[in-house]
Picture 1: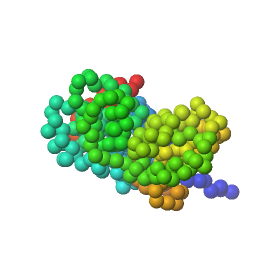
Picture 2: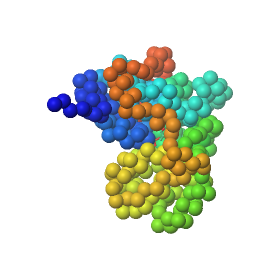
Picture 3: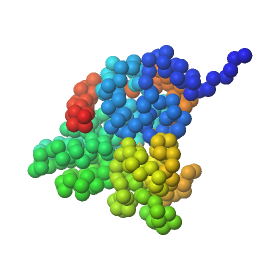
Length: 312
Ligand code: 13P
Ligand code: SF4
């Protein structure tokens, strides 16, 4: 008798046959995280993309992440299960407008958060992610003026940490701006034994309440170091899957969003556009795939490689 094989099993078989690697961000749905070869934060994912020997990269994340992988691997096929999986932060920084700002400040070093388009990367001097932003800013000579884009919340946080005044782009992540400080404080009162941890894309009033601020990978590491505690987690709720798997004894409560949605927490609609079925289909059909013009790619790879070099 032939047993029905699951979609996850089909993906695993096909992945081996095609010599493909599946890279997934912590915000992906649990079933995608489970079939992935590697689950990580933006920095970890770009490091994996830079070193993979697979012939095909299936990027279970959003467009700018897959695009970064393609910039690093021009001769590989980079697939994204849903081409509409964008990012509000990347969208907040159109390349033409950003180009004008850069042109108006020729003496500024342009540090750009990885959540941006390839065209914006091509206008940048160095890329950063939330796990290395402080280090990257500190690597620039003390008196050199800096443009920091596109996330103003991360920018303000890094300004505070480094004491550097930076020219900030006015962009933000819709998911991290959706947290309600009133609801968060009420939740904290109900759980006075909890520890608030937050992603630096959150607004300053949320960050002020946090005992730990860091990237998704940083937040998971922090929980690992305090395994038996209770945490209120202020980032996209997809992270709870890996966090709970890594630290089964921890009590994890997602930080509440202003508007109640299905999970009464914050979910990134872009990240959640990828489904297991779409992942299977894109691996099977080898489409949709990412394309970056060679002209843009040649410029965009320089600031990405600078970041990777500084993050070793
Ligand atoms: P990190 O995974 O680098 O913490 O970034 C979070 C995020 O919003 C990615 O889109
Ligand atoms: Fe972009 Fe925010 Fe979604 Fe991350 S969580 S992909 S920053 S919209």
